[in-house]
Image (cartoon, rainbow, N blue to C red; front, side, top):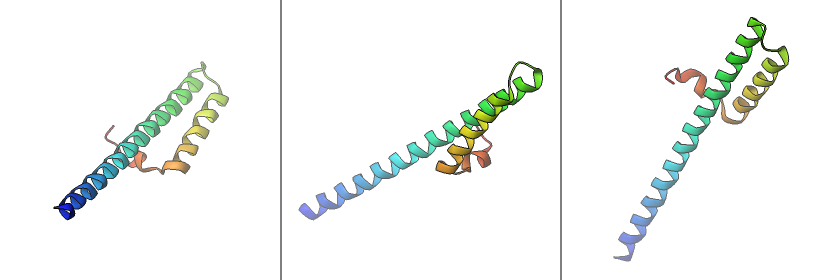
Length: 80
């Protein structure tokens, strides 16, 4: 009986770990999408005369830092 409980506990821990990883992945994708949107908005504002090149550069830097830390998978998803 103890062996069964140990296996069940191990499976539950594995499931929790996988769930946590998936949540973190989704959060990173959402953050990346938000940064990409901010970059686009900054560029658009600059082109329309209401934004600055500095705003665009800051948005680009933030996006590049995110990509360096989490990868660029969110750029390829295209469904959000």
